Amino acid sequence: MAAPGHRRAPVHLGLRRGGTQERQVDQDRDLILTDLRSNKNTFTTSLQDAFQQNPTGKNGGGDPWQTDRKLGIAIHGTSE
Image (tube, rainbow, N blue to C red):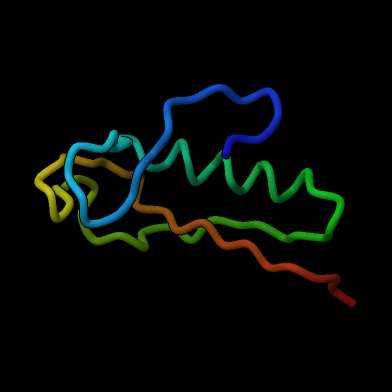
């Protein structure tokens, strides 16, 4: 389910074929991190560079994907 105000095509994950697959996975990662930062709970977010070895590839169903190779990190809780 998208956050209020966001209207996007659904992304279906799983073993079945025939679903819509998002090619640009970084947009979804960034949306999730933005939503977590705006949450009433305390989330610290960051990106780790060069996490993914290859910037492009295909998933198990043969659908292509591409990435900026960064890993999104979200930590819930307060830091003291």
